[in-house]
Image (cartoon, rainbow, N blue to C red; front, side, top):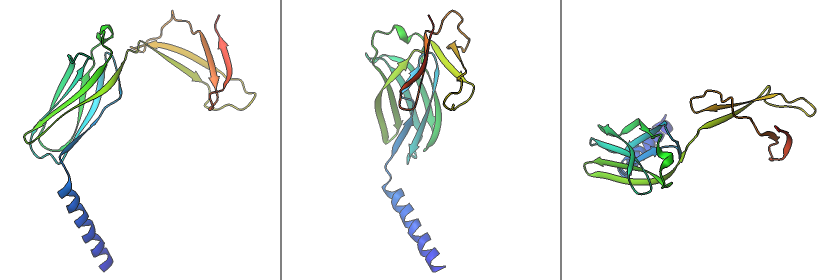
Length: 179
């Protein structure tokens, strides 16, 4: 019992010391690539922030113009899910350098950080579906190829040019060419 009490006491001291030396900070979890015309989900976590404030997340182009912005109010430290709408007319933008800016104002704690991101303009998705996950040597490979648009509707007019199968070392094992 004495060992348990001393371990608990040591744990309490460590927790107290950690709390004393903890600096006000934030964590933003966001994808490195955003899809054009979609809503991207971001997560903001505030650490050791005890005053209310606002976090603004902006999507900026290469010249610094704001393409999209969202604001979230925080009462104190904690986590929130934030949705950022990525406009669909970005593909005509001549500047391909995009940044995600995070600005927070919590009285005595302020931050302003920028991170470079990539925007993807996904117009078509290709799915290859096999009849089983693994094959043994000599077995017949059965598969189907489906191309869909961003609304997940099949594209009938787009023929598949070629399909090939590689092993885990990226050696091409078989191929089919549509001519």
